[in-house]
Length: 243
Image: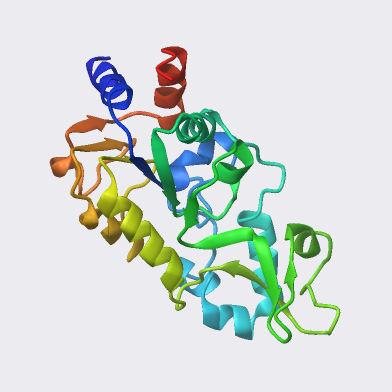
């Protein structure tokens, strides 16, 4: 693949790479994306995605929210795939400076990545809405119904629901990393979720690379465009032993 060879050359001769990823990075780990025919919202009945995972629905239908959340959005047995592993290797080799992810699964950290900005939060952090005490994922998955704190308060996942704002510190760190990057690799995202997708507009570096199975609005700006499975691309790069 000609573009794969070009990408290998970019990685070999570049530093300060930032990876910006979405749901497609984790599909090979058995985590569905959101809007594909088999995605999280494929069988939602009469409710729209915005309703099911909205702040208002969480408050007014907490038990129903948690049933959907546990069934369709939490995959505690998922493990990092070739994409997560190669991205972690790039960081360990000193080539990649940050991961900016729209995913909430924590698989980048599980693969060994250290500098990870989670735009939409994480299933592995959960907090009491009454006293603020934090809990791990097991507190949510080990019970039925609404998980509660020792103080009796309702525990909420530390994920960004519709109607909620992104964390300002995460935004600042993500934008700063992207704006300073020499190479921005966008992978596994169709770039339709805002405001996260708009952050790539801050990139002023040398090489913009997009690896995605479907078109994105940023394709025309990319130096390299690979319409492919991101896990296969990174697995092939790993086989080349560039690092």
